[in-house]
Length: 203
Image (cartoon, rainbow, N blue to C red; front, side, top):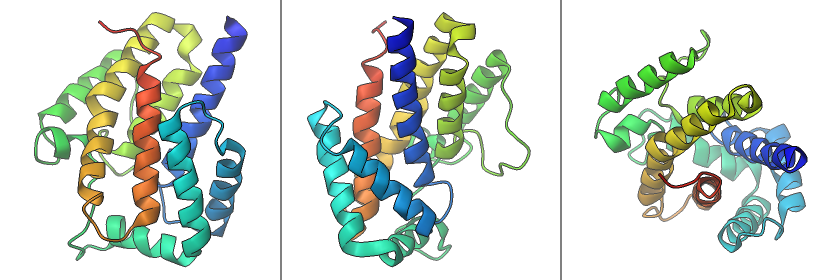
């Protein structure tokens, strides 16, 4: 069982790191090559048809559109201050209808209870997608120290914060005419979180 858990957690960390890399900074050649390499290794082999379809779709989009298109999508969605198509990556935006809403206060209380703080050089709030992925990865890595507490926290983070971001962003971007690459990234994230929730028992 310990070996199976280790293998599962290793796979989870790989996929979380992959999703994080799509949103933590602008794409470059190193990232682009890493994405294609990982997608090739995952191609049709996750055991979840929705996730497999999303992987195939993203691999095709990257190969057909190339790095420059990927960089242009990222800039328009996440960096251009004048873009009318910007996608928010904060949980409070989708939960409360505004950034820095009450859900962020609740998250900060959870972090306090877990004795986890934000690193000084991370400038976004704690409900940002990248921070939440880092938090999940940290909890997965230290899970054996306090298994029940860690699993409960992971479940809460997925259901109360990660899913609202991914579901909300996916609803927005699917109405755009272009952005096939990042549509596929959000589709992968959405499918992966559905798979993640299967790891946790219902209350």
